[in-house]
Length: 141
Image (cartoon, rainbow, N blue to C red):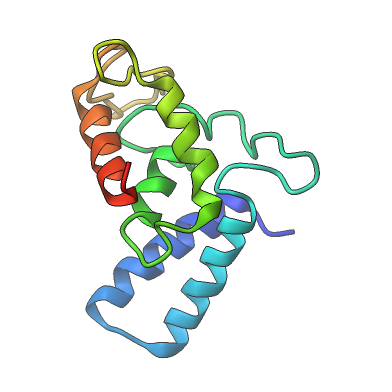
């Protein structure tokens, strides 16, 4: 079983690379990797449907070495796979986290030297709210 974080980060990087120097064999690998991500409905273990990692469902920006639902949704809704039915669980999840002000709050604060959270521990995070509103628009919510 491959490392999910390593695989997804590699697929995101290959996707960016292939935008500028397209190669069919790289696209084949990207499509195969995206299918693997979609098999997991972005964040679920295949064995028990629990989250793949402790922070995969946390909302914060910018990303760190972990993979998050925010990063996966941003990526997938920017591809031809963005409206795949297996993305729906993640869209439903983020919709439930939207607050009464129509925004999303930061629910995890990664701490490391040199890392600065753009929204802090805000209950009304403008950065993640912008990103999640854009994701919803792309998905058609």
